[in-house]
Structures are given as structure tokens and as C-alpha cells.
Amino acid sequence: MSLPSSPLRRLVAASLILASCSAFAFSLSDLSNQDASAGLKAALEKGASTAVANLGRPNGFLNNDKVKIHLPGALEQAMPILRMTGMGGQVDGLVADMNHAAEAAVPLAKPLLINAVKAMSVSDAKNILTGGDTSVTDFFRQKTSGELAVKFLPLVKQITDRNGLSGRYNAVMGQVAKSGLVSADQSTVEGYVTQRALDGLFLMIGEEEKAIRKDPVGSGSAIIGKVFGAIR
Image (cartoon, rainbow, N blue to C red; front, top):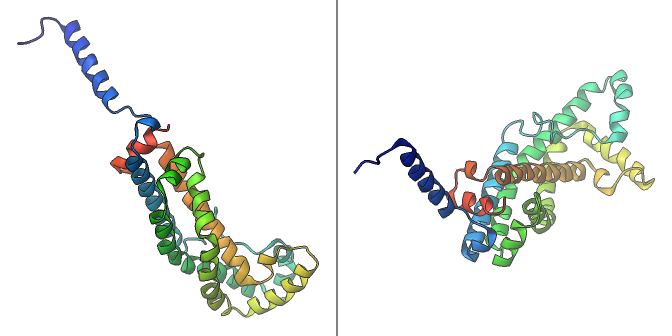
């Protein structure tokens, strides 16, 4: 039977829409532990995989101003002198090598990141969900940064050693480090690049995390949308 009037039809339609919306309105307390854990793990895997894919492709660091690795301040300040002495090409080559080394190392991170996700407890999941916009990234950094540095360093050294300037960098920066003007991670080119590669990786995971929190439905995953939508 058709409804007798247009206003009544609109009222019924509005009621149905509200009922439909309320059926999908969740709060964190409504989520089961299984849902919270599954949603977070899906978000973690998505963020980590996307960050690794974007950084681990050709020029993933070099063409991204957010993560591009520049020379440390001490050497950057000496650039005009180095160029005047005909070393500009070597310096440019070192910068390119540093960024390509980071790009080559980042794919090694994916298995460790995924393992950290698999090892996450249910309580970890709920704590991270309510822990702020970078809690996922902070979790990854805490769980994986030490082991990632160990894995990155040999590959980075293998690539940066190809540039004749890297040995000179290590000799100069080793002396500068003794004066306390630079941190220990900058005293060798491989140590410096490894740290900057990790910083870039966690930065990009953070960008993915923020995007998921801002638009969980747009993530394309029903469980991510359900869980992260509940805490918005």
C-alpha cells in the first residue's frame, strides 16, 4: 500500500535512515576484544606495508622531501668549500648513495614489522587504539627499531662504501664526534644513513596511521572502518 502523503513518506524514510545509522554506530566499549585486535592488526599491516612499498621503490627517499637524507650539518656547511675544490660531484654522489642505500634497506623491515603485529596482545591493541595519533608508530618503533638497525647497517655500508667520499666522511666525522659536536650515530656514514632510514620509515608509517584515523572508512577495510570509526 502506498503512503498517503509526501510528508509522511519523508518522515518514514528519515526514520529508516536513522535506524540504519544507529545500527552501525559503535563506541569502543561496544567492540569485542577480537574486533579491536583484528582492526588494529589490519591497520598496522596496511600502514607498514604501504610505507615500506613507497620508500623501498626507486628514489623512494631521494624524491620525497619528508624523508630525503641530506649530509649532516657539519658537512653540509662545508659544501661550498668542497665544491670549490672540485669535490662537488663526489658529494652529490654520496648523497645519492645514502638515499639509495636507505631505499634498498627498507624492504628488510617488512617481516619484522609483520612479526610485531602477530605478537601483539589484545590488551596492547586496546591501549594503542586509545593512545593518540602516533601510538601505532610508537609501538612499531619500540618493538622493531633495535633489530632493524642491526639488519640495515651491513647493507647500507655495502652501498655507501662504493663512494670514495664515504671513507673520508668516516675519518672526519669520527674526529668531530670526539668533540661532542655530532651524535654517535653520525660518526660513520653507514650509522648515519641507518638512523635516517629508520626515522623515515617510522615517519611514513605515522603518515599512514594518521590517514587511517582521519578516514577509517576510506581505508577500504570493513574491520578497520569499524574499529577506528568507533574511536573518532
